[in-house]
Each structure stands twice: as structure tokens, then as C-alpha cells.
Length: 212
Image (cartoon, rainbow, N blue to C red; front, side, top):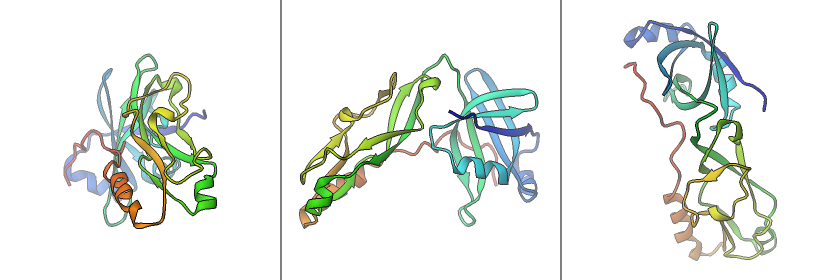
């Protein structure tokens, strides 16, 4: 996996003063973890936004703060509701010797004969899976092969997912990942159920310490 590096610098500015620096193209962030005291930093807004936009939620990044380097996960991204731009990012430092609990994106691959030949509707129950593993084994995504779905009503559950080595799923094994339903009205309860079990976003994390 290619190393992703984001550069930053320590900052002392907090609170309402942060707004002025945002207008200068700076992005405030915080680094925290079990092994370090929280560190407030600045990053370049344009560069950091570009890097984070192409990363999966479970991707690891290397933060370069002066001469220090920290391997971290993005735990929360706060955005401006009007502009959609990043306002603040929380990074959690990880240790290569400690297991992580992370939500990993599920990506559908293949073609279902039930959808192709019988006009079935593919309904997704999960788009992320919570897993536990060491940082070195952390996948950026988990593939869900739907070629086995050949008839209306066929489904794939968490227990049936093919996971990378040393990665353990934490979600309920009986949780539905995808199911093929008919286009009739009977499909509506299944769709409602799928919407109700939408997973918690990984972007939830440590609350920003600055108040606007």
C-alpha cells in the first residue's frame, strides 16, 4: 500500500481566532491517541482536501509535523454546511502492535443473474463493515461478489463475506449485506429494513475543540 503523507505544523491559535486563519487557506486539525497528548495542528486546506477526497474511510495516513511522524486514521471530518469545504479534521494515532476497530467500505462487484435475467432489484443493507485487525492488515475496502445471487430472494449476509487474512468482522453474522428483491410492492418492507440499518459513519469521532 502506498504511503500517504500529509504535512502540518503545530498551532497555538484556538477558538474564534481560527476563522481568520481558515480564510488564509489553513485547515485546523487535532492529533490524539493513547500514546500521545492531543496536538493541535494546521494543514494546507487545498492539499489536505485533495488527499482525503481520494482515500477510503479506513485508509492510514502518515502525518509529518516538523521532524515527527505519526501513523493515523481519520476519525472525523467536519465540513462547512454551505460551501462543503473542510473545517476541521481529527486524526487518531495508531500503533502497529495494537488491534484497531474500524469501519471498512463494502464494494459490490460482479453481476447478479437475478438482476440481469429476472429484473430483480439489488437492495443494499450495509455499505460498511466494522472489523478488527492490526494496522498492517487493515483493508481499504472489502469486495462483495454478487454473482452467486441467481434468484429473487437470494441474499448475502455478513457471515458469507470473504475477508482478508487476519481481519475479523464485528457486525452480526446474520446481518444482511445485499438481497435481490422483485420490483413488486412486496419489496418495500425489505427496502425499509435496509434503510433502517444504515451503519454509523466512521467520520464520527472526537469533537472539535474550537467553537465557531
